[in-house]
Amino acid sequence: MTDVINGNAIAESVREGLSACVDTFSEAGVVPGLATVLVGEDPASETYVSMKQRDCEEMGLNGVHVALDADAPPGELYDVIEDLNADPEIHGYLVQDPVPEQIDYREVLRRIDPAKDVDGFHPENVGRLVAGNPRFKPCTPHGVQKLLAAREVNPEGKDVTIVGRSSIVGKPLANLLLQKAQGGNATVTVCHSRTENIDEKTRGADIVVAAVGVPEFVDSSMLSEGAIVIDVGVNRVEADTEKGYELVGDVEYEGAAEKASAITPVPGGVGPMTRTMLLYNTVKAASQQEDVAVDLP
Ligand code: GUN
Image 1 (tube, rainbow, N blue to C red):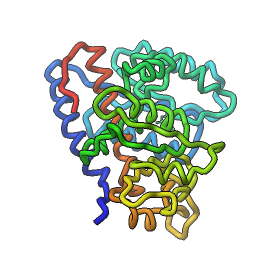
Image 2: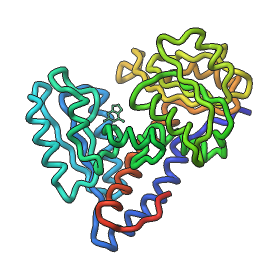
Image 3: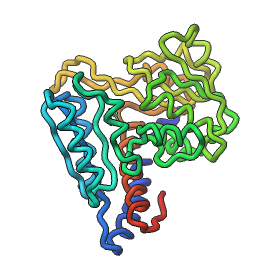
């Protein structure tokens, strides 16, 4: 039987641990604060940030949302960033990507206080991750690592093929799994649009992570029997539903599930873990800034 990895249940158990941390803060008179900043009205981004705010509410965190117009000049965003850097009640924040074209996202990241960069995207935090001394592990890669750990899958010595080299998932996940640390020590292959014979690289892997942003890119012919399949993709494809679309992963689920020993569904796999690890990083940031010791799950 294929193990369908229930991301919601694993996320819930991590959230219980985080809830205990929030209680510890409460005794010290601290409420961890997370701000989300969205420039413009991208519908998917609006959904993501509203879910992040709802998570804050449910966890008892101080959630703050800042919305800027799609045509906001860069200086307006920089002022918001300066204010958030200086705000003692905000321990972590993020600027949702993508941003409109007048804004340079790299410059945005450089301006975020690295101590509050709960996405882990600031160059200093990227450098620390690559050097093997992460401050904040980026949320989706960290969520994938937690999912594997929850299923007692130790990546050590395993061949892992990641399809996709994004700065948000592929590259940081490769770095995490390479680390000489618990949850790491894997042999990692990263495939991308110029990779030749991707199917050979995925078929040779014990663990395949699909993070390429193309609906159903990975099919069963690309997997070896018994592979563990982690689907990071969240693609909106037109469908005859109330919303006019449905969510599809980067893996052709039905076929892949027949061949895999374990697989994450979409939705309900990696997504809830990503959101939970953002809460995790916020709690971690608050612990560092407020000097309150907590037992992170
Ligand atoms: N856009 C898609 N995923 C993310 C994320 O994890 N963080 C930010 N800031 N933007 C995103």
